Length: 200
Image (cartoon, rainbow, N blue to C red; front, side, top):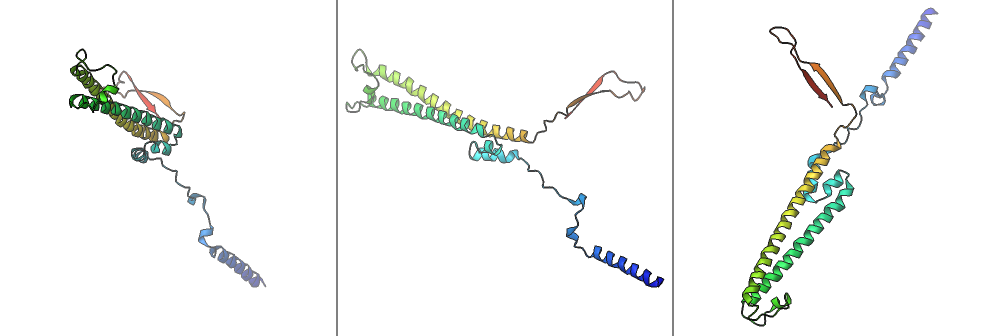
């Protein structure tokens, strides 16, 4: 009878062990094997490329939506002044050419000034005035074009710098630590002074 009880107990233990080993391995979850999703990395290179391809897109990638109207407003204003100066430049170039060609039918210069051309106001006076306006408007147009290129580069730089600060650690765990300098190895005496260690 005792042998029968011992056999029954061993058989139950064997079945219990068999059930434990028969479980699917993927149903067992260990605490140290749980994988968390990797944190999304914010890439400054991507923000830079986005802003280079389409101004403002890098700012959208950096979640700085409020900067986009300023970027396009700046480009619109610069574009307006480039066009305005270019149109004035073309007007004065055409007036200068019409004044110098000797054809009375080409008289676009008369729309610019009401004073008639006569002996008191010869064409040479007008030509000097037109040359100064042509030079002035040409220079201003070129400066606004350079300004547009600079504004474009600032847009790219802004996206790049902001992208670097997205993942920047700004925690309050900032501290200063003062340590004495090491001792002189020859005399084993402390050296005067301190070192400043800045941890962040």
